Length: 436
Image 1 (cartoon, one colour):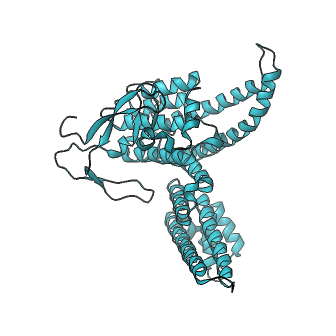
Image 2 (spheres, rainbow, N blue to C red):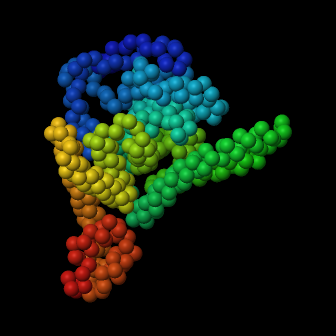
Image 3 (cartoon, rainbow, N blue to C red):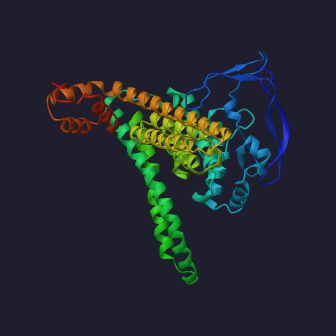
């Protein structure tokens, strides 16, 4: 590595899929310290502890990659695959790659500079790792790992700043891009619903396979494939349309000369690959929600609260405020109910002092959850009220003296979040006597 001492030592590691040994980079001890983190865990900067070392982005080296079979995974589990209960399933799925799967893996590996990783290389590696995990059926996936990989993809895009996602200054273009982004979010949800339907349909399809004569077309499979192609084509074209509205320039061909061309090529092969920070965060939310609800990692109350807090943070970043409000209410409601149940338990005269102390500790933890939910709610309300202050004032002025429900309806019709309307109502700002 030129321009400084390498922060790595290279040691051979066996690929957990093909068993080929390749040199992988291992950070030398005491190379850097992590700096400030954002609310969703993204590290803003690193402090290098050795002035002679060439600075690199440590986040780019989160994964190990096999150049022989293209398998890619987080470093710890690439070295020790049996520590992850999902690895045998991934190994089995990797042995049954379709031609299309192979085409995607080959494309992402093409021109990958694994020796000196830059943004495009890091993005390709994270795509590879995520795609490998997504080979499993929905109900057998490692939701937590997939969610974390998608979140890291969002961070990669965020670090690119204006080079990847420059603010659209033209009002017409900005409004169009915002509308398309909203539609894209609904399309992503539609695709997940289709995947659920596809799992049920697969049973009917497999039964029809057994009854279909050799060489004949299974109509269930035929229609499913057509629907999937239509969905994928729509997502791919939507990406190109968003970029056209964002920049005013059509993406040429399917080359990989620019980041936009590279992403357009990725979208043409893998339509549901996240192509910007918001897409990656939205996908991460879907998998992290499943992980928080069913992964043993979140059985501990504090870990569960941390997971929910991360989800709310990502929803706010994606401006999915209604979903964030719903989740905040869920924290408050569940924690309040559980706290009440435990307080009732304390009244049991047969409970010894040790057991009572355990219950009190749990109550304190739940109280922190309630307080935290209140802080998140206030933060979200502050963001929304600041953003929509001019609209709120205008609607209140136009409906001065009107009944509360009429004012509330008018606010929602003008795009004010239902959560904000409820807050204003609770605070008395919609009262006819006050609003005159």
